[in-house]
Image 1 (tube, rainbow, N blue to C red):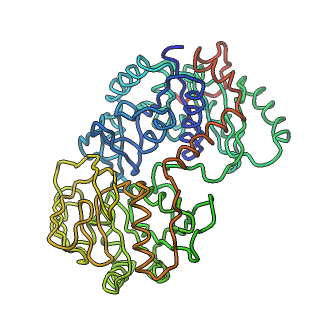
Image 2: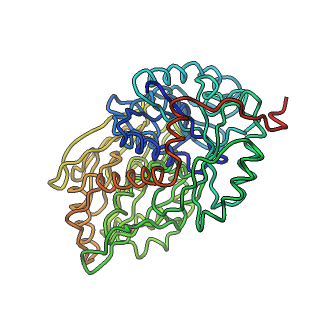
Image 3: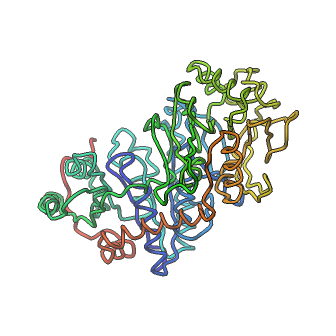
Length: 503
C-alpha cells in the first residue's frame, strides 16, 4: 500500500477524533504500516515544538508518537491560537504570521490556505504508506463549508474516505450521525463511508438494532463500537471548550510510596495553554492535581502551579480579580512552593512590557521573582536541554516574552527565590529524574512525608496509553474493513440522504 488515507471526522467537537486518530495510527504501525498523522487546521492553545523549531498542535505531536515518527510542521500546517473570543494568532507551517479575527479568517484567508494544506498532505502521502487525517468540529457546519479546509474541503481535495465518530455518552448519537450526512452536498456524501461509535457503556447487543436501522436509513455501515475507557483523553487540544474548574488528575497506576500524598493546585487562568505540563505530576503515585480558581483553594495545596497562557496580562488581571494574586504573594513570602511556567513565570516577575500580545505597555507583575519581561514580535520556538537539581532536563519553549533575570538562583532559563520557581520551559516535568528531585524539594518545604516512586517513567506511561488506544481499535473496530477503506477509498454507490447542504 502506498499513499492510502482516511479522514476521521466527528459529529461534534470532543467526539473523540484525536484519540481515534491516534488509535488507528498505533494499530497500523503495529501491523508494520508506515503511517503519519495529519490535521490541516487545528485550533488549540496546547502546542508543541518540533525538532526543526516549528509550532504544531500537541494532539498531532501525540499522534506522531503513536505512529513512532518524529512530528513535523507538515502534520499540522495551520494552527490557530485563540487570543480571545473573536481573534486568533495564525501559525502557518510552524511560524506565526499574524493575528486575525474570525470573520477575517473565514472571510477569505482560510480558503487561500487550501492549496498549502493539500500540498502538505500530498508530501506526506508520497512518503508514508498511509496518512490518517483528523477533522475539526463537525463537517456539517454549513455556515463554514464554503471556506472549509479541514473537513470535507480536504476530503474532496485529496479524495479521502471519511469516517464519522460520534460520542454516544452524550446522547443523541443516531440523530447526530444521520444529520451529519444529511446536511452534506451529494459530492461530500459520496466520501462518507460510515460511522464509529465512541464511549459506549453497556451491552453492545442492545445497540445493534439501532446500528442496523442507521444502515438502512443511510446505506452506511458502522465500523466499530468503542467502549468507554477512563484516562484516554491525552493531550487535549485546549482548555477553552470545557472548563477545567475543579478537574482532578491523579495516577491510577499505583498507591503512594510514602505516608503522605502531595496536593498540587493549578490556577485555571484564562486562555490557559499547555496545561498538559502538569500531567507528568499527576502520573506520580500520591500526587493529586486539581485546577482551581479561588484563593481558599490554595490553602491546603503543597504546590501551586501558575501555568502558561496565551494572554499573560489578562491572566494577571484575572489573578488580581479573583484574589489569587495576594494569595500567591503570601505563599511566596511564607516559603511555600509556587511554580510558574512560561506565562505563569512571567506574571511572577516585577513587570511586563507588552506591546505585542495585549498592547497594554508596562504592567506590574506580582513581584515575587527578580525578573523583567519584554514582549518581542519574534516568537521563541526551541527545544532546550539542560540540568537542574542535579538531573538532566529537556523541554520546549513557545513564547513572545523575553525575560531578564536580575537575581535569585538559576533554574533552567529562569530562577528560583526560596520556594518560588519560574521557567519558560514546557515539558520539563516529563524528565523523570528532575521531576522526582523537584517533588522531593516540594515535599520537604511542605513538611509532607511524600516519597516519589523510584520507577515512574512518564514516557513509558504515555506509550502504554497509546497502546491502549491501539488495542481499542484492534479489539472493537472492524479492522479488515478499515484497512480496505484506507487502501481503496469510500465504497462506490453510497446513497444520497436528503435534504443535503442548503443552496
